[in-house]
Image: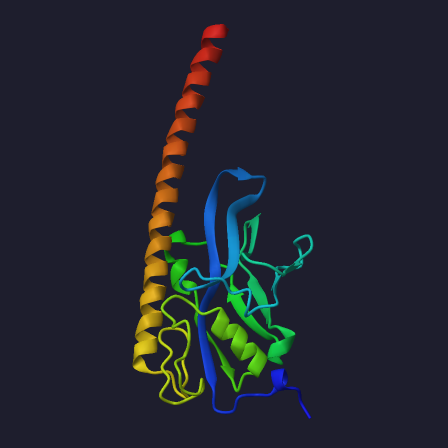
Length: 226
């Protein structure tokens, strides 16, 4: 007979949205034959902590990279490297032992060109826990995201009258309100990233102009010293 903590709650579904993907910045000047610095990541849509959901995250890079299989046991779940080519990254998500959930693998094509379209490649994902164990359900409830109630009310915690907004829902089919909330969070994240990319590009252009200016000044000094 299973212990109380491992007993599954039939009919209960917990949904948690997250995004994964990469951002890349062109290196100026280039680092040997490397043209870009990039970061592969897994994160929540609203910036909340996901360590209660993931026991660890494995990010497998191209075999030519040193220690190509990176294991991340604590957030932030990201890997930053430099390179010149695009390739498929395998992201493996491991859940806590108390969840009794098997690991899942995600596949992401690392994108370097063009920088403006990188955010569009970030998949919108919803991790769905069907019939979670009692122990894992308590962990999910204790680590609620923004907008979630502190308690589930005076009724039975798994009552159909209980409503969990945004990223925690008790239903077999996620409703329209949940979809709209998740879409809004994703849109805000994408806009923020695009603004950051524009800012980085402006900084790079300023640096390029300054480098050209310094080169001209050096050339003048070399001419005068002859």
